[in-house]
Image 1 (tube, rainbow, N blue to C red):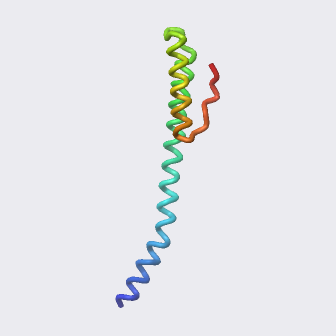
Image 2 (tube, rainbow, N blue to C red; image 1 turned 135 degrees about the vertical axis):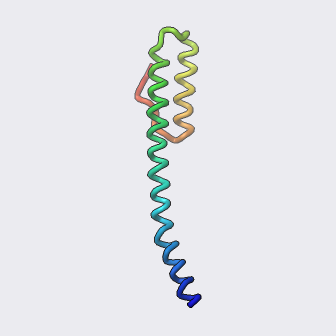
Image 3 (cartoon, helix red, strand yellow; image 1 turned 90 degrees about the vertical axis):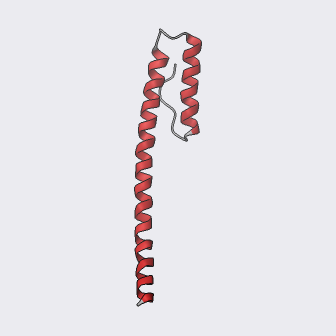
Length: 80
């Protein structure tokens, strides 16, 4: 009886583990998309703002570009 339960447990773990990893990957992908969207929106707004001095705009745009690169996300299409 114990062997049967052990085999059953191994089978359940073997089947559910890949499913759970896929769910985690999907959540992470959605989080990455949201992060990139927010960062690109902020980069564009700051880059186009004339209320912020040019030097600070460049620093902010560089910060957003570096943050996206550090997160291994594609850069924003906005070019100042």
